Structure formats: structure tokens, C-alpha cells
Image (cartoon, rainbow, N blue to C red; front, side, top):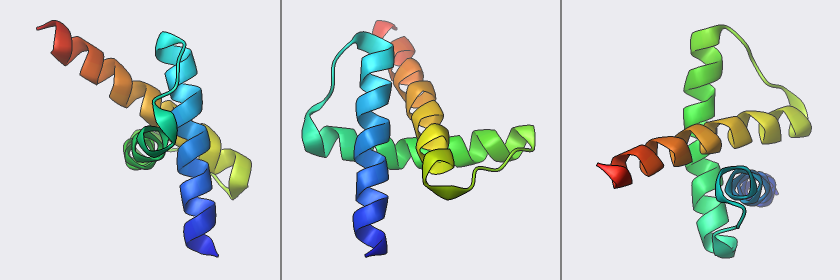
Length: 80
């Protein structure tokens, strides 16, 4: 059951990050991948700042922030 919740959080976070950064999603698989990688990035960012996210909503927020950071870095790299 935990893997389903993990994938759901990844899908939601990836979709939200896509909407925030360029107004569109990346498809179901793309959203999940971006959300999962965003969760890792968000975990590092939150730990660096000294914050922690708990619960379902906190995980979505942390993953979305990480995914937005990830998409921003990818956008910068693509311009170079």
C-alpha cells in the first residue's frame, strides 16, 4: 500500500510542478518521475533549511517544491 501512496504523491507533485513552471503536465509517468525525484531534492532542501514535512499534505508540498527546483535547474541547463 505504501508504494501506491508514494506513486500518488509523486504524480500529484509532478503535475503541480509542471503547472507552476510551464503551465502543463508531463503525462502520468513523467509526472511520477518528476515528483519522485522532486521528493529527493525537496528532502535535501528542507533538511538544509532545517525544516521537516510530515503527513500526506506535507509530503506533497515538499515534493512539489523539490520538483519545481528540479525543473528550474533543467530549464537553466537547457538554455546553456
